Length: 598
Image (cartoon, rainbow, N blue to C red):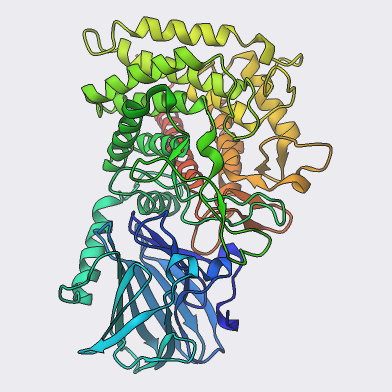
């Protein structure tokens, strides 16, 4: 690995994605992570994890400072370097996306003064196992293959192969000039005509403008819109959304907590669906409902915690022959496939109920509702791995999530006399009551919810019962839980999941940004608007220049920890923005209303 392309701290990375795969770009213009053709395929650029494979466009003169920005409402990124002049590289994956073909567009622009950049391409498919071979140049276009991946590179006619096998060239531009590079990577023969760069850019800009709403009326509108764009970029045409674009980025250095998140978690998919529904009717919600319905109808009570984006069972975890990101071990696959997570069933009902309130459900979706309710009826008394995917226990959060889901879907059904589910609504509500009545052993002597009958600790996830409606906001257990979470798990405006042991919170793990947004929502529900806004602003700022969130945030070192970008954190940010905007609108309306309306 050369000096210019060493791994960076996570806040410095940007993401370009098209829904079928995503690439991570460092501040020096190096794409050092990309799996093709799909999210969970082996990486062709694995330099992020200490392996071979990268695609670099960087200033030839190393005397520069870096920056960058997204075009609003898209994942079209501009790498920006200021030295003797200003050079930018506009970067994107072409949209609409082809699941079998990845198209990387890079337009180098001399913004102020002339530009001179160094370009290097080293494709190493199979997590670095396969070198480039069968290289040939025809009509100014390079082609070749790496393992099962074929490639075609347009705009690099002057490139030559170096001793280490990479293709490299230097591009010089006058002020105001630009140069396009188009790299296609596919698991099929590329025998058509090379694409026109201008046409690709226009189609990609048009595609982003169609799929991302303007989010007008939301607080933090630009960040909320960006969160939506990230969720869209992580979501395949199948409707499945990967939990993150990467694998093996450690949540804690040398802590043994590095996982492969390039799969679709049912729970994360539901969190995303709830966030989209909180904002309004969008096709992204329909894709979520479709994917969840397909999985539920196929697997029923054996619903897996996670799937590939094509709906297949995920592979078990294995160690990769890569050095790994500093502080972590490189792995592929995930052992979550062996777990039962009861709360996923409740979350599916929550998102289907949210979609129903927007009149987005069909008969097939209601059949999925029946299937999920039946699964809850069969399995709610069993121990499960829970939200945090740890030891099997009778987790209070899991059961309360089922209560919330059952109440939500019953309320929708009972509100439509004669509609599908009207007669079932009473039965669903009765099941919710039965589960709730079974939980006295999950109430601490202080009156708050505790994690499980045998675990008296509080847990940030126990804010969700009041947020999702399992119990009323003013229920004494809700109030006591909110108070305990604030007192025991908060630090400097951030929130931790639970206390692992007697050590200070930050010694065990980073703060969970998801939990921080939950706190903002819970406080908003309690009418503590100013405090809710402080929590929201604190947590939405826990990102780098590209506005990407990881799962955890190291409060002491102000560093991002874990895989990047973490979808459910972006979903929580979007949902929280929608909630706080609604609260603000209601407050404005109340302020403007007559004091004594007739």
